[in-house]
Length: 159
Image (spheres, rainbow, N blue to C red):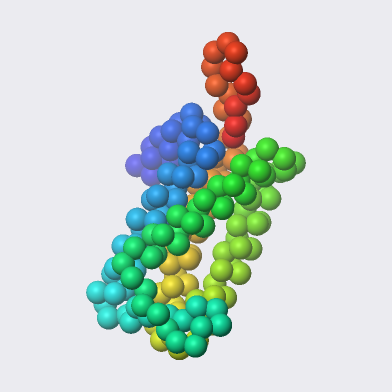
């Protein structure tokens, strides 16, 4: 069953531009991280954290996991499109950059002042959930050939 799903995804992803695959992966990751945050909230994890340099913690409201994921997806998509167009080895460059950025992103929740340890771990795990969905999906699409629109008079396609 797993192989059939992988083949279907490869066919789906191969027919779509890179930005669409990245956006869809981002929406999926946003749903997953929001559900993860809601589950943590239901389990009693305090949803309050201090930002960089903040003196006090602020509430983490419903929707913030998804919003953060979508903002990062936007910038990750820009990065993927640029690397897909200009990098000699776009998959290696994308995976290296995004894994590095994911590691850096963990610093913020793990060092948040006035924040419960359970909240820090929940936020960090949320980053990892999003990365685990988006990075392999976009890397797979980057490994596929460039999509070119069909038809006369249409310029070359984008990844």
